[in-house]
Image 1 (cartoon, rainbow over the protein chains, first blue to last red):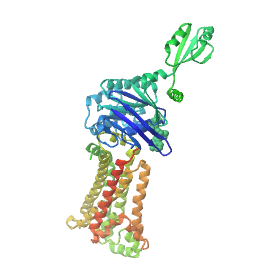
Image 2: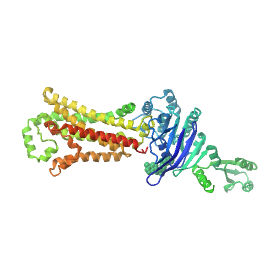
Image 3: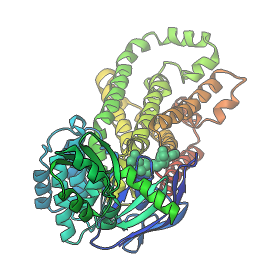
Image 4: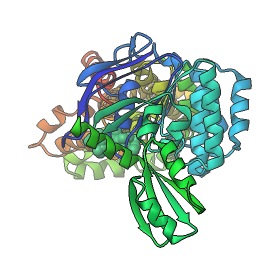
Length: 294
Length: 270
Ligand SMILES: Nc1ncnc2c1ncn2[C@@H]1O[C@H](COP(=O)(O)OP(=O)(O)OP(=O)(O)O)[C@@H](O)[C@H]1O
Ligand SMILES: [Mg+2]
């Protein structure tokens, strides 16, 4: 459905993207993960045909997105990473305009999206908060029921409730067979929607993984608080990977093997367990480390 | 061309275009209004003009004196003010229509819709030219109105000269719009586009002015497009329209076409 093939673009100064390749299948939700400045937006600009690749190409349903301007866009919905609208428009007049540019949209679908994202489309865009603008952008990307939806950091600016609504929308569309590519910094967001994800760092794809594999490499820190300090010492000797400990508290690093952790902790009286997910940056570092060893 | 885009752009720019048009109409009415009081003193004024260095009166298109209303209007209005108004219009509007949309990122929305860059650029060019046409047309009508109102019977008005003044200005600014559109279409940065376009347009304008004032620097006006719009010459009937039209239309078309082609081919930072 969407093929990014060996796309390279080097900016003056050496930043850019290098030999980026991946494919997204029809009906798949594909995540594009990476820290700030990794090259996510640059890759997406190439996918949208805004930039000319120095090497390589992008194809959507057989159309080359640089060469076949005007033909592939009807299949696509797009949310830019930095939202900028034309001046002097309200949410409604902007969506009306986008609808006419697209040659008309299903009004019922549009109204439903506006309703679910809960915003007042009569507000002038200039006066909207970041999250409100983001919602307008999301409606513009989805209202014409495109086959492929490309979203650059779709949940930035959305509050947790709206992030949830957004995830529901994505899952519903996915059930209808829509293909998604979305970039993000946030692993939990990708985790809930995506089938596969690519990880990009310093302009290079360092892994394209099934999301369950990523979950397996994601380390979680469990902070276990024991009733008795003696139990703690016994626990420390159990052979689990101990991150740190203090008084009655122990921090255990668990990666994939939750059963063994559950069995060991069940032997003692526990006052509480807290869990800290490893952040994305650390998952990347794990990938680097593993890449170095393998 | 993309009709929904044209409609939207006209909607958002019509007010500014109307301000330029009404500003210009107001000035030309003012000129017609003060002409009668000038005409009664035209002998004194002509004497004054003769005492001025010839370069200066040429520069401001005053060499035809104040004897007739079209000579007066050609010198006082088309010689300077109208050219300034249209220069500002071309530089500002062409920058807003292309470079600003790229700089701010709104172009991303236009290009994510099923259209091509050439169509988007062509539509924006047509919006720019529509504005130019509106301003010139309103000014022309205001000129006729001004004559009827302040001078006398329109039947006595030598309107073919007046019309030719407007056609000449339209041609010159078709070329100037082409140049400023080209600069805007290849720029990523709005301020930069505005700066470069301003320097180029007002640079050409000044070359013409300086070339006319100073005998020594008269070569300067020959490299400026602005010398191809010569209001005094139009009124005297000494303008050779063939090459003038050819060069101005050619320059304008080249600017628009090159702007569209480069806009199609370049990487956009959206
Ligand atoms: N036009 C440009 N000229 C020079 N460098 C650029 C240009 N555009 C992007 N870059 C650089 O390329 C790198 C990748 O930028 P990009 O916007 O793709 O990152 P990103 O992954 O989207 O980051 P973020 O998460 O912050 O949105 C950055 O270091 C950026 O500074
Ligand atoms: Mg980005």
